[in-house]
Image 1 (cartoon, helix red, strand yellow):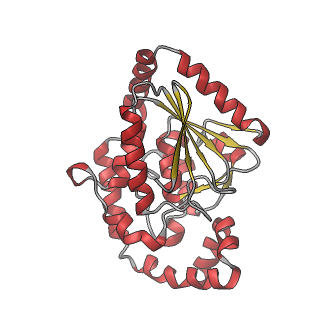
Image 2 (tube, rainbow, N blue to C red):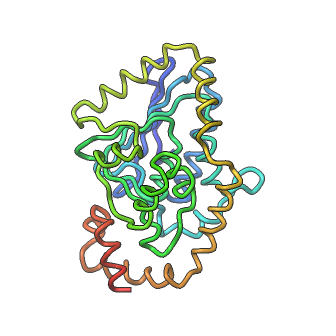
Length: 274
C-alpha cells in the first residue's frame, strides 16, 4: 500500500501512519486503501489498540482530494453503502481501540474520519482543525453534521460548520472536539503510554465498554446516509460550482502551500470574490 504503513509496535499494539504528501488530502484511493487496512486489522485478533498518525509534516488527515472528487463521491462498499461512510462506521465499531495522535491540519473529510476514532490526542502547538464545507458551498458528508454535535453541542457545532474557520488545539479541547491537547514534545510518549495501559486490560471488557459508549453516543446509520445524500446533492449547487474557479485563482495567486496552510482564511477570501 502506498499511503498507509502498518507497524507492529508490540504483540498487541499497531501503528498506522498515513503519508500522502504534500498535503495529506483524502482521495478515493486513500479511502480504498484505508478500507483494506481496516479489514486486515479487524482480522488481527492480537491487535487491541491501534494508533493512527501522519508521516507528512504539518498535516494529519486533510480534506477530500478535489482531483479525485467524482470517484470519492461515487465509490461504494457493501450493499452500495458509500465507501467513506462504510470506512468511518467500521472504524468507530472496530474490534480494537483506535487512538489518533494528531499533528498538523485535519479538515473536512479528514476531520470526519478523525471523529470516528475512539480517542483523539492533539499537539497543542501543531494541530489545526476545520470543517470547510459551507465555505466551499457544500454540506458535510461523512459525519461532520452528525458526530460533531454529539461531541461539542448544537451551538458550537453550528459555529464550526457555519464559519468554516480553522481552530487550534486548545479551542478544540475546550469545545470537546478532541479528547485532549498535549504539548507537542510530550504527545508521542503520552499516546504510547496510554495505548500500552489500555492494551494490558482484558480485551472483552475493553470492547464491551466501547460497545456501550457507541450505543449511547453514535448517530444512527440512517442519519449518516441522509447526510451523505444531502452532500451529493450539494455537489450540483451553484455555490459549489462557482467557487471552483475562485479557488483556482487563489492557488495561482498565493500558491497551494499558502492556501492549504491557512485554508480557513482563504475560504473567507473566496466568499468575498464569489
